[in-house]
Amino acid sequence: MPTVSSEELAAAAGVNSAKLRKDFSYLGSYGTRGVGYDVEYLVYQISRELGLTQDWPVVIVGIGNLGAALANYGGFASRGFRVAALIDADPAMAGKPVAGIPVQHTDDLEKIIQDNGVSIGVIATPAGAAQQVCDRLVAAGVTSILNFAPTVLNVPDGVDVRKVDLSIELQILAFHEQRKAGEEAAADGALPGAAAAAAAARKAAADQGPDGDVPAVMPA
Amino acid sequence: MPTVSSEELAAAAGVNSAKLRKDFSYLGSYGTRGVGYDVEYLVYQISRELGLTQDWPVVIVGIGNLGAALANYGGFASRGFRVAALIDADPAMAGKPVAGIPVQHTDDLEKIIQDNGVSIGVIATPAGAAQQVCDRLVAAGVTSILNFAPTVLNVPDGVDVRKVDLSIELQILAFHEQRKAGEEAAADGALPGAAAAAAAARKAAADQGPDGDVPAVMPA
DNA sequence: GGATGTGAACAATTTCACAGCC
DNA sequence: GGCTGTGAAATTGTTCACATCC
Image 1 (cartoon, rainbow over the protein chains, first blue to last red):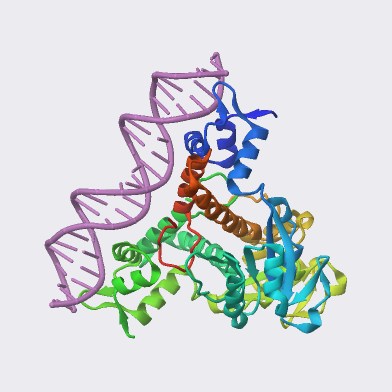
Image 2 (cartoon, chains in turn green, blue, yellow, purple):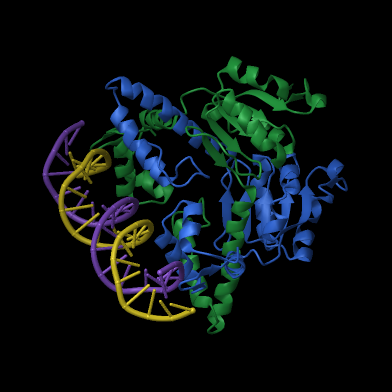
């Protein structure tokens, strides 16, 4: 399939074709009128815009279950990320290979960051160690941090932090699950608070429906 | 602190106080004019609305590094989730305790779901096994699935799926990291494509800035 | 003829601003 | 006097519809 139309892409993504065209237009005029978008060229342009064509060395600090899972995660390489080093505070871990990469000790953190030109760090330590690790990463030159530890990190201006809370997604599912049950009950007759719950549900559903893969149809 | 004003909450959250009040109003009138919101009462009402006051038994299927990390994750219990069972296809895992819970074999999946009244399942298997596990969960009565496997799952109507891609957050950081570098270059003089990149960045930043914890100030 | 790119129309969301209540 | 709750205004985002170009 050498070319694709906005109509086809929109149907696949579950969005309006005009929205898709308008969004693409912010990146530039990469389509051909009467023909559509050249698939290979479009993929390249979007990849470039998203930074997928660059090589991003990252370090993972805290090689417990989660750190090991991240080190083994296949999705990184295909998106331009390269695990430059694994770092753990436990001396017993030092030298052990995880996902084929030897774990290094926290003592060498600064040197590792500088030698590899790392600007993105992943924190998968226990909560208690996270802020300290964060401070050292920042001092060593890291300017973007992905935080899996259940703590809010304090960072100076110019440093970006994103926090991943694995339970939030579950909570969203539970919210909709609760709503499914509520709808059934509401169908039987008036229920105190049902209107308020429905309003809240409507709002939350509009923010992000539960269906990540299904075309954008709002749950009734 | 027995009560709190919308102004204080808004400042803490980095949003407009009117928005906060309007959002709260969808849940009902839980504030007192001239006083503010009773903290304990407000927490309870929001918890109830989000389903945090319910007990949600969940099963985790696939007890590799990620599954084990999830089983050990502290955030679940405090949000109303209870890990009812851990399930793995490897017979060697059966009976071994992970996070204090003995792993059970996939053969018993249906029985486990039914005995525990589970409606939410977590899939942390390799990609190849995910769809099959998903089908069995759904057939056994699960209606919400959190998918960590890098596959798109097909489910019948009425089943909610949320997919967690651990590399997407990294990608967002890399996008902003790239932009930081681009801004510097752009400051030196006109750069081909800089306008388009800036437009795209502006749009993406509006969708969700990189600063999860900082008050809602858009990156310049 | 067919599909893009984009002003204009429309829809949704956010903020203002103030009446109403404690 | 102070703060909530909410119509109305302002802003932002989405969809329509069509001029434009291949």
